Image (cartoon, rainbow, N blue to C red):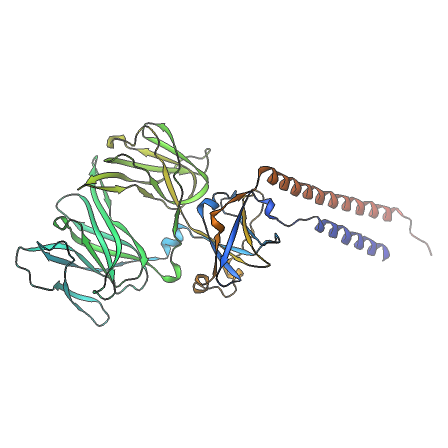
Length: 458
């Protein structure tokens, strides 16, 4: 019995020594450290991770993100991320009614004045000019859309139309809840073009993600206002509003050959939009975009479209964005149909957009707090949001305290410090293995010695 106790005691000692050799992660283990400022009510804080900071990560899934307090203690945290596919699955597309807005031919500079008939719930039944217009003097100025049946924030407008000729259709977008007071939602543009026996159409217009009962579309050139044949609105519930897109700085590329350009991204990213710089006026370029994660893999088609920068009526009309599905890529290749004149001998710069990532952490211990990232070896440590915040709900998430990058500063640890930290970690790993091996060897020697010892006779 005493021999078993001795063996158990030795095993416990060995395990204790081994566990003591395990070192917790420290800020110095990461190549980049960013000071944070917090505001609002804690103890949970959420940080919208700037793309410039995110690009310092060494792991695509951000497994190397950590938050530390002033004592260098790691904080419990979660990542709020969203893919393009999950955002798409949370949206609803609704067909809406549309009504023409007419003005007299000499009053096209002001919005049409109308009288409406609506049902008890606000749905429009009829829209007529406020005053009788003489035959032949009425001009179609725009369209009034009835969105009263949609309670969720509006994300996108989708139009179809007929017109006598192809081209661009530009209009202003205004929103109202009472048909009396209107708020500007910016400008929209749709297009129908023919090029090289191909037809290119743009039907979608982005909206600011706000709610409104009515939308008013007023054409910049009333004489060319088309006849609508379809109007749809895409909305997302307030519980599942997509996180915003964040754009990169311009990225220089490389020209491979005529009409073919490539770009290397800083890391693998779930890219959802690419914006190509079009420097020269009257540029027209049918393009296809491909991507891959690394050079050893084949190129995969991501998107295609018609990019242009055209001057009409003294204004530039620009379409320089391509929409992607959000898959992970680190290299991009643009192939241009040279029949449109190409994009020049030098590779244009591009910007790419990814869905915003938010870091939510539970503040423990005294601040200031530091965001650390940039390690190829650490393992994932983030928790699900519902675990980090036991009574989690979208409303509670929106009310959390906020953390921001302090002054936009990014403090990067010197390579020597990172090397020292890595070496220190390696020595601790070697020490742990050495202790474990010595403990096992010691236990084996003790066991053999005890087995060889002749039994004590009574």
